[in-house]
Image (cartoon, rainbow, N blue to C red; front, side):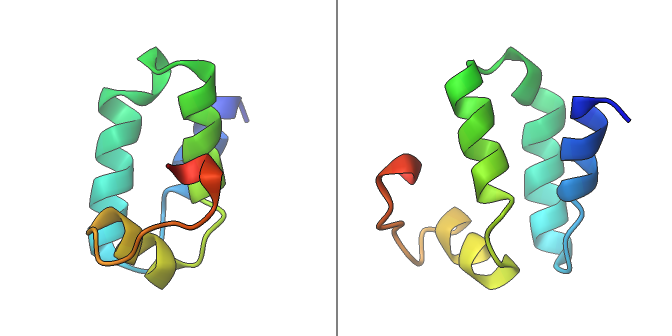
Length: 68
């Protein structure tokens, strides 16, 4: 399994809304993004669903500097 396939698999979440948002970014922007942005995206995928959902909808602001 190549790197992109692994990231795509990790975009599959328990919430349909997250699946749509993450997969859309992956398909439209991920491969052209700078390495630092790809790494940040991969770090986001490590977060629990509800925390990630709150960040993506602007309901919560990350306190870790990597996500700013």
